[in-house]
Image (cartoon, rainbow over all chains, first blue to last red; front, side):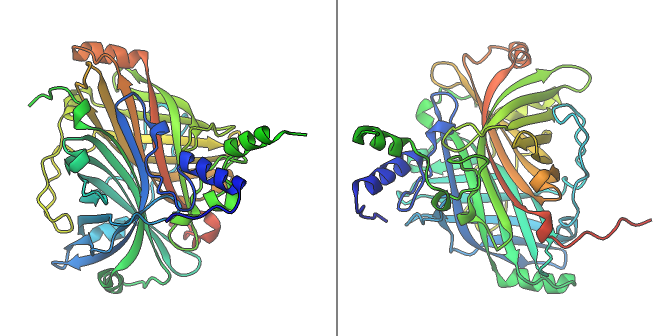
Length: 226
Length: 230
């Protein structure tokens, strides 16, 4: 969404923001300053999703996107023509685990042992991110959910994930790399019973995921082992 | 009095103003908070990078250990910041880092998931300090390494990504709850010919640049946790 500058300094603001990846009207998702080495590309962006839970059996189901995903930059400016798809099979019991938090860690923080209590209930998700030029990145990897009750009566629901590129198309065809994201949803009210909670999740809810890809394009790769 | 060209240069070098770019970073002009992509009225979103030096320490339980500093997404140092991490590893599982997951069956918004070669190899603990250590966030969670090798020219790109659950915090983050997603990478040139040489190189240490995304709710917005049982 281009804007017209009203004076020279405003125009300079726009140039600076464009260079920096900031600002209204700037779809800054490429952050070359965060790459290490000459071959890496770093993409950082948000996606506005709508997610719903499909309950398949009394104990299993899956979360999935509902076809409304739009990518945005970190200022919330939409990336027209983009889309995303995701699915995450879950055990219903994982919801109960998500309210449990890991214990405080002992110092020093840069030496073992880490205490992984309440961080081992993992699901595995797959994601597809498609850009306006038709290029896409498909990824898969483990996810971990956490929930905190809010003073207001609702909850904040987080799902973070680390994923490896499984396939890609267009300018990303053959790329290797990883995706991480931290996603969240806010529920202004949250019932106490599990059936009522599942009912809310089945109706669908908005979620936002901030994502980071670090990848190397195929044309920078040598002969990979089979 | 500044001349016009000096003013123009200052304008170009000036960081974006606070409200537009999501101000609230630890110092003027440095931005790690992104309120435009927060979810709901209570969430804070922090996105930043780190520059770390990581070493593999050998012993009965080998582990990676790092120290470094925090920079914003434009590479500007966050003053008074520090990062320290550890990741114990089973070196016999290191070859899994070279294996990539299978092609997934579309559509992506429906199962099944073929999760091969994405099982975490360990748990990463990460500590981030801001404002001369007055504020901190500590996380723990599963980590997955991946390596793309060889690159043209014989180098290798080494990624470690992790989910982090906040375990504790200090200062303004005391009692905060939330999650972090982290991906760090290193460019190793040339890529060693043998695993022994690789381990030797990792023991000497490598430079890593990471990106972290925190989503959190401060303690003041949380329902107080019930007291621990007997």
